[in-house]
Image (cartoon, rainbow, N blue to C red; front, side, top):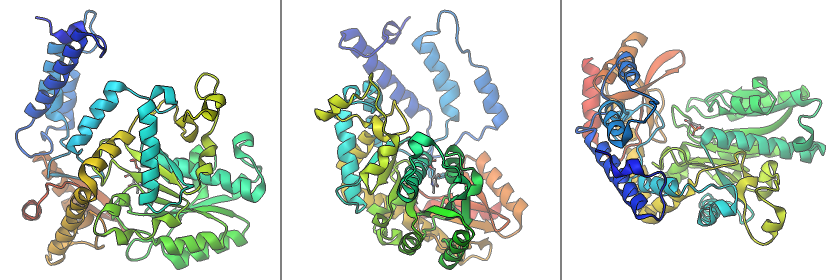
Length: 477
Ligand SMILES: Cc1ncc(COP(=O)(O)O)c(C=O)c1O
């Protein structure tokens, strides 16, 4: 028998479409809930087994298999091997479970399918994004003339920051219009400085900007994994003396592995004394602004631009990120007018077309997730989530500090702990794989040439008992 969903195409005001929508949502929610009955993160199937099961699925048939048969495959083959981000046994990456209300936000976002390029494609959506950006500027201490834009993630926020700061540097210091003329003849002199532990999106940015990886100078870090300020000063001075043009420095506010936090005020001083711009990559650490530990971040408003990821510590679904700029005109780098989309005459009448602030054209209404979750939980709700996460990292670190079976080189400032068990690289690799087969997913990285394991503790359900049990299991493998 056919489902009512088979007779529908799109959501509309017709009674039959409303019923189909309701049924599709209800049955999907039920299928998700039925796909797990314990707190494990993963089925434990090998890549080969998962590939074989997925390979067995029909794809595009001539007549279509219909909702029920399609959902049978989703229920039986796809959902059981999905990674369950909400599991307390999932802790390898900066990849979080989603807050319940934000799953509802996603439903609204998709049902209306607003696009953020022009006001007529998302009237309420545009106004919510504008309002949310304004509130975020306040939260991070930016002045009234600041602005920002939602992006697809920390990478796009960082890349956008590099572009706008490069453009501003060239225009201010050389009267060069990079939008119109591209790179100046002596572009090989331009350099951007980041921590040796910064995210690789800065290399991507350098490539995309036509500067190449060699324009990215990775600065050494101190014993707490923060940019070594004296070394940064020395390297930048030497580069200037050698004729290079340092145009920006990026502080990492929460490095990907250790969560270490660069000293933003010392980096501001370096930027000022060398005529450079300062970016804060707070993709990871930005969530701590709502925690009891916000003082650890330093004064982020000292940066000219800030990357904030909501799909990390804030527990909002992928994708959800923002680039804030202290001076709204920085975003002019992305301004172009098209007759079909964002006519200047409409903008004069008060229609806001956000396309001019972004490297994207069609863009998701991700701001709704921030609005709905902030509104519902308030500062207290988020403080409790962030404090649990950072508190769990502290608990785990102190437990293993006092255990001779473990080695943990850096005390955590956010929610990640990098550690190893004594016994060498092979033992640590083996422990991670053995846990994966049991549905427990932890991270692995390299520090000072040594294979290390990593816990990224973003899950608010994670308890000290879970952590104790994990310590016990790792030791018995
Ligand atoms: C410090 C930092 N910056 C930027 C990024 C990139 O963010 P996204 O994965 O959202 O592009 C990450 C990702 O983990 C990160 O840890």
